Image 1: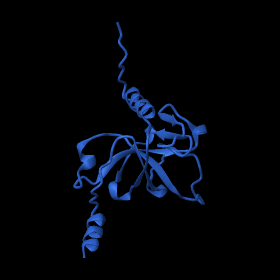
Image 2: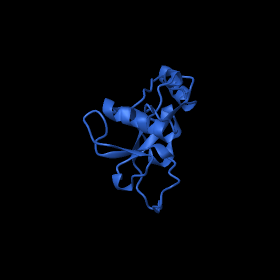
Image 3: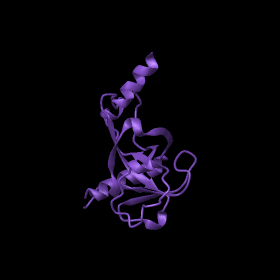
Image 4: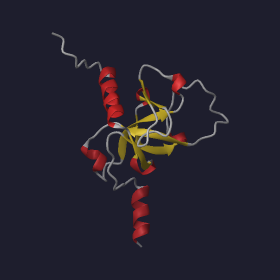
Length: 144
């Protein structure tokens, strides 16, 4: 009977996992909102798309908080924009060179995320944080 209770709680959106900044999860591609795409999505073959957890906040570990904030990733590094971060493939991170699309930050239900399947290496995580600050207009340089 516990498995039935767990599935009901999952249907309600409850998830016991802890989600940490820089972790990579997979989500059904059709759940990802990409409004700036110029591609004709009719006939597109959907897959599971990697997303990166952006924030280390207490709600990421709270099973009563149903969403996490993520940025989707793409292997199409040729389509890089100013708000994208190139991450090179690594053993612990992405399986191939990818873009983290910070211009497409979006929440996902925790129960819709599979993984984690990887984690950004420390240098890539620091670059991600630096780009997020830059996009927010924060200048951490010492202006003496």
